Length: 552
Image (cartoon, rainbow, N blue to C red):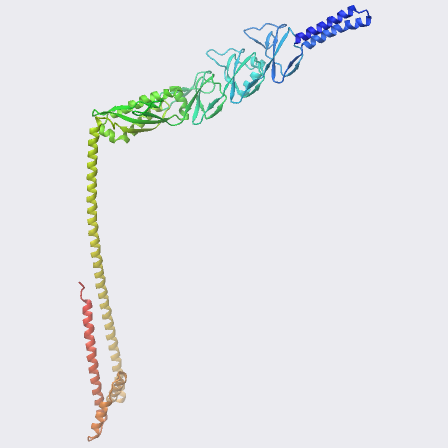
């Protein structure tokens, strides 16, 4: 279009010159003559104007008036002829004349969400010997290098060939004559997994990792080193160059390797059953399940030693499981193998853990299912063992019954002894109570006797004192009268009898006679009272004797 515009102005200039030559008017002729060079200049200037739209970038190619590119360079950075590193931004640009420059407007490079841009440079410093990708740099530095081709080819030290860095989602004003950009999907690490990166560029690996004490070291790569990287990527989405890195997604889930007879083998986890031979010559299949997983920290070791393919892990594990189970079976008899299944599980688990640890694989469990249940050679032996076990259980049951009977007998004896002890204790307590009652009565009797004695002594002393004052006969009479009053003795009849007899006598009734009558009455009353007390005492003694007698 710029060339057409220039030709148009040239034609107009020539037309002006032609018009100036053919006109007779001197003023017009001079005006057209002066207009011709102006049109020519305007045409030349207008032809050098280039426009770049907002969503485009201008790629400039210099065709003349410059030195040749050397050393195999194809993009110019110092005014050489050829594709220029510097691109035109959106807007109007002056000075790019036809024949001298070609300006091509190309769309901006756009990286969609969930994608990365793989960049390959057509020019730059050659890659180091043995390298397939340019060294990795910081993402900000790489963006500056890609958007500024001059900086990439000069101070940035950009390398020719595939770049290990990628462009993240966005729009970029890139010199597409220098850089070729290809969009690919970003790397996504699912849940319960990690990504192990194997760098295809960089120096030799320098990190020495020992998976287990008895295993040889594994060389892993650090930053800017070639090989399996020691650091893994957790679940997420990452802008990684899938060509500069070999990306291995390693699952951390627990997986089960089946060694089961008759199970459909539809994948690497389904293996043929294991057949073992015991020390006594029996051969039978064993149903085995092995649980294993790969820890995130061990994933680089697994990839370095076994690779990423699941079959590469199952193969060595399968071989180890078969060898361990067969070797363990050679040391035991068939019945012991059947009876000691849990022991076989523990022993096999320890051996598998030690063997697979050096490969980075963790064995979490070993399960043994059926052990030769359908094997015709093993069935008679198992039946004999079953019959023996049943007999043993019956014997144990009988022993338990005998033990229960003995315990019941012992319980009955103990209950009888307890009852006898209770009765003996009761009798002992009754004897103690009787002894204490006897002691109580003796003490009461002694106290009563002592009281009587003291009272008698007091009365005797009182009687003596009274007798000294009024005479013994009068004192006796006073005491008799007290007794009569206290005891309620009827004395009137006797007194009356005595009185009558005295009236007919010689000297009449005297005090002595009265006294004698009273004494007689008192003696009779006392005799009756003594007789009553003696009978009561005999009855009390008989009762006490009956109480103190031992109880049968």
